[in-house]
Image: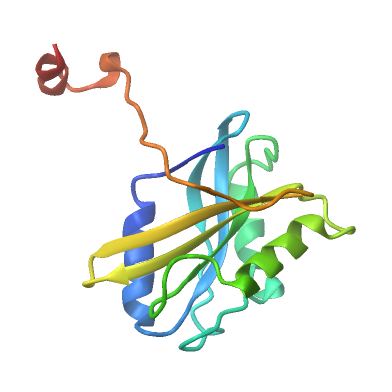
Length: 169
């Protein structure tokens, strides 16, 4: 699986994490499918009030409005734009998923009443008020979680400004 993030996403995470301070926050990740197994995170929700210093659990009803607005903006093109997974912060701990994180995500994908066959968990942490540490894990029905990394977006030379294109030649 390949996952990218839109350019403004990291700045939005950084602002939300600064505002939350030492309290855990989180929400949903929404993405555009660029190709089979290739996604770009283009939006996310933030639940800035449910977390504590050591715990976060998102209230699904609180995020339904954000998801509905996302689907409205993207023309309800569910094949191309959809829910990708969950995110939350670990301001005082490692960005590795905890046992509780893994159980929660496994429940999401293995639930008999859910149509979701996979979901991504992103855990973030702000260091020095600027650097965003993260981990990404993919949870799929009937499979062990798999860690992944963000992919770099590759810009074709034809789309590069002249100066960058000349430097590559």
